[in-house]
Length: 259
Image (cartoon, rainbow, N blue to C red):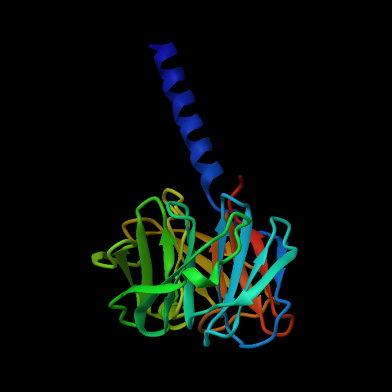
């Protein structure tokens, strides 16, 4: 009986330790910078990561001619191009090696990548639309669930990322005060169990995390002196939360999940 109790306590402790390791780092430091080389536009709207070529992509919302630029794993700028679409959200699809955007009003645009991971302009095409309730929505991409996630008030609207059909809605555990200071355009999707979704409280400079049922599960505190905004300027890729500065025209990454 004593041995069984010890085994039970050990198992519980191990489980607790594993869960703790998966929780986001509550006070992360800046450790990655993606700085645009080209001019044009104000609102940095999204960052995504190409796991095949180990590249980051960053885009400016508002016009098809605004920058979409490519960076290596250390943040060095290695390729510059236009967005080729009036983008808002952006994600990498490993199944077909493509970059994808949701645009103003809900259009979806796809562009294939060459062997170096750079966008091939000749392949760009609009291939559907999302019935999004907020025309400025920046979609989060959950590759595990094959879903695009869009924020509308305190509701997450989850669409199939192949058909753009609405799969389900999730109500986030947000009170009225929190809702008033939430970045209204952007939700991040991490793919991390119990911390699947995050939104930015731009006044407190906190990222609030929620599980797949909408329950509030964690808080990440960002530096108090960073620039935040009621819309855009917030993203997630490869374990990093990113915030954007119009002064430096750069995204700053804070690793919140360990490799």
